[in-house]
Image 1: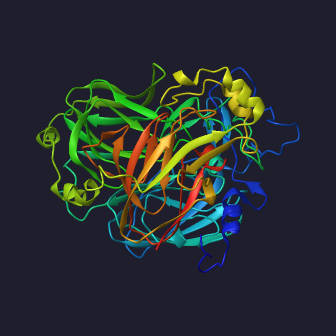
Image 2 (image 1 turned 135 degrees about the horizontal axis):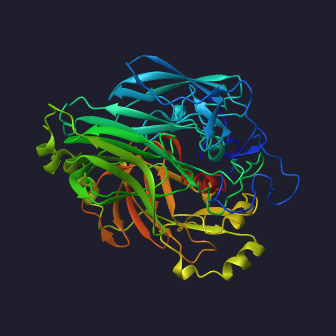
Length: 534
């Protein structure tokens, strides 16, 4: 990568900023699934590893529920990141929040508008704000060393946020993401269309961010490290599933209503397999656009950082659970309580039952489809290098039977002990052999490039990876050699263990960017590359 504009920073500083800001590795781990071990007292890889405090300040305010802010073009919105407390079970837990809310405020704006977003840091760690999925200017992307220095405690930074695309997006830190995001620093952007017929008519719209939180038998989170990431092997799996930060989230609707759900996965590593028994569901949109064709579905897969827009019809009274089904068990994410209301007339059922085909999206995909059967211009392999001791242990595991998607953490103790100092996740450029930030891709502005991604099942520890490209959009055109027929614009794609995925990247946004695995602990263990769009 060439020298950085405005701040005249070098590539070395860029890498340093991402991996080790102010003496901290971008490495603060979460937790694995619940076990009998007291991980809050245990130190990985040595007894003197420094950890962040899990004490709840006496003056910390109770966390609040998220609220929607209707944003007008040209407005300045303030987000204050601060320490809050939350009662989970019978214990107060330390959290981080924007404006005291988890999730942070829902910022709702019209497509095509721009705002200023002032972020004030009142936490005890440095931070930035990444507007995930927005194709905005790269100097406002929230990557330290590109456009800004880290926001130190007590400081502030103003971002210019633009909304060029209709849809669902979200914001979160891009320093110590595995710690700060896990602690609660995330929120939604809802970008509304100009065309009133962009979406189907519905009776209501519900914005839901899914997350999970790990607490041990003492009701504490396992310790977060200052100078390295633990849980580097598989990432942090929580044992408490949350919808809008509530383990018992419930929505009340009227019999006959059609509801549009805007779903975001803010978990560090968990992939959700979403089902709703007894509820008719229709898939409408993903990360950056609507699908070419609306489809009725029985389940949906939602990887970390992915978004999904679905509509649901509730023709009968009763209680319906939206659940995550992984490893053969069902876990409730949130419930919908449906009751009759005298005088209510269901008027949106016909539109719900109609499966629209969107000619404008199909037209956008014409140039993409021309590359669907072509050879890829770039190829990358997803892999990992483990320390000899851990590698030896892994030899006794049957990787041939490893699942395509890990739904839970089957080896939490080992996962907890693994750190970014000995576990190195890798993106390998097949043509050059370069790895991670040594890769230096360049794309011509407004070009389309076919990229093949292979997730090596013979690596030291095969696992799924959600791959995210900053500032651009792409289309998944094939998975394991099978062409995808119903195309949609994405910014994050889940590559299962052993799979080969073809994407066509549209380099529509000039600047200096990064691509990485959105399992937070994998990112902080090196799994990222840089690229220029010129």
